[in-house]
Length: 381
Image 1 (cartoon, rainbow, N blue to C red):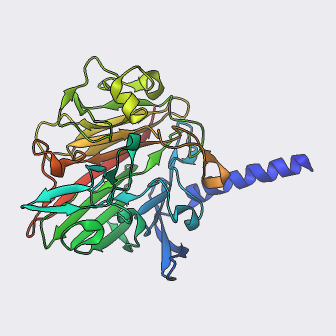
Image 2 (cartoon, rainbow, N blue to C red):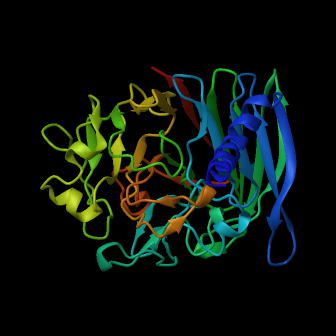
């Protein structure tokens, strides 16, 4: 009986992998759950020509699952999340979501624009300091987006759009945001963002997926090797708000210009690591010209051979090593997400830019279009 139970468990573990590898290219739609007001939450399953599969829900524009192969061709889901919609409500630590209006932190929940001061929610308290984080109490990660399948030149994906109202979460302007997720036949997740507004407003939209290249819920990410194409970063104060300094990484645990395992220096005796509880900082990407699509990061996991290369038009990237995961979240297949059990690579403008005049501007004005592109390229070695 025990043997039969073990065989059944092994088969059930294989079911997601088998369905991922046997699906035809395209997009299918199914119901994922319902909002409290009974609006239907949809799940969009995108498959490319190589059998890679991605599940996206229109709640929070969340990437629920992403199956990519290891060096032996075995497909595994490499993003943290939940099997059911209920896991994402009423709150989760932004697993897989698009965050905004302003991704990352704003000091004291305030900014001044064109002579007027705006007050935002202080929904995060790093080291006991209240700050604004990821758009507030109900940011882009907690709303229902309009969504539809899209296909172009044999590539399939999902188009999601949302209009944030003037005054929503304290921000000015009616802002319409459109996000496209494309799963290309080059095994890339290509994300494009576009937005317009009728009043000047800060805008910094990013993707907050937690990756674990060993598989979602399989150990920690401390053995993952990271390369960041950045010779500077933005140190923070106690509230994890940038001080305004753009500091060189050379000679510090923040120098990832050559590959380093995350665990090698994450607990080093360095003030910035103590403030962030590890890596939770913005790196200033080395770009030849602003806005160019260039490589930002590489992550490699030796046991599976999986690798992610990140390319972006954004000037910065927030490398976050899951320091606030505390082992209490149970995710897919009942697996517990461990402390430092996932990492985020959030392509972005710099934190607190509305209050930092020396940082690249994040102000979107009427008549202008916000545009941004990020590509996550999956391969093995």
